[in-house]
Image 1: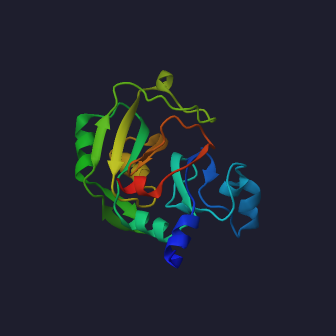
Image 2: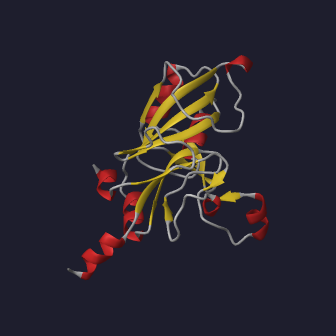
Image 3: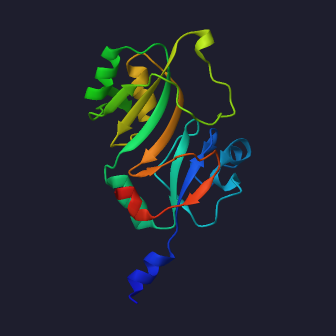
Length: 202
């Protein structure tokens, strides 16, 4: 067996339902942050030596890929594969705003303006069936809210939150449900499941 083949077989690939309030890195050099924040290392289900593939910010939830394979991680991050999100926004978002999101909109990125690439956006007529996130969210009793589905092929820092804010509808909840062909399906927060790496690119 070739050395390269042995190396590939030994690698691990997982999908995790990252809970709300967890930073998608395993630790930090900042001792104060370690005391006050929750990291991936604090989740009991995770084996050692894994790295997150991409990021999902602290206040976002859902699908996070984990691996021991640095080449796989880099390939996913650079490949432009689809990432699907379910997003609860503050307000009754209108079709004009949906079209702006679809076509690309100006957001701030590293102190400069960035135009997002065209993407898929639709309004959901019924709320998605998602696990409770554990922290209360403002709901329709205190004013209108709307669930939307967003599918992008890029992943700039806090991109979707910035996009919805740019059209006047701040994000209240953000859940990633798919990366490539790997979906979150019926997983629950903190659940970890093995995956075949080829599924991501199908």
